[in-house]
Length: 169
Image (cartoon, rainbow, N blue to C red; front, side, top):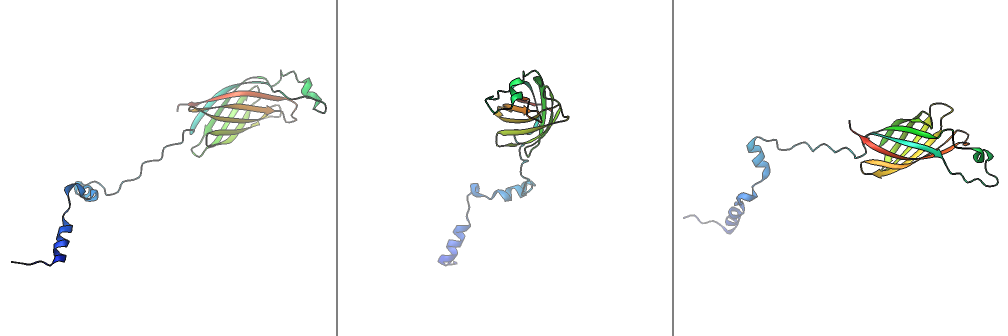
């Protein structure tokens, strides 16, 4: 008969493990699966992709009081008013590149998405075009906002509501 000391009995008792407590790593090695797997690819941000929309530019309300630029009162709103189109490409990091065409003139667009807000500057391709700024907020999977534009001398001031929709690849 072999007598075990109290410490040896405790050590043997500690070696017993329930089948449900078996280490998962040993099971994956036994099954031939790799012990570590690559992390899943990060999902693209909701705003990443191509967006397009249309606008209807109109004479923007400018408060004309004494001391204001007299040409504002003389602007009948016909020049640089009417329809236009915007095409924007937004990268995964939120940078915006694109173009505009129509009543405000052909332009290049650049900007950024931060949180759920899109901010874009439009720079005209020629002297006749208007400089513009679009500020829009997330609306579903697109954006809604306001485009404000003016001529280089700020004598023509226009505004337009804009709704941008995400386009499929």
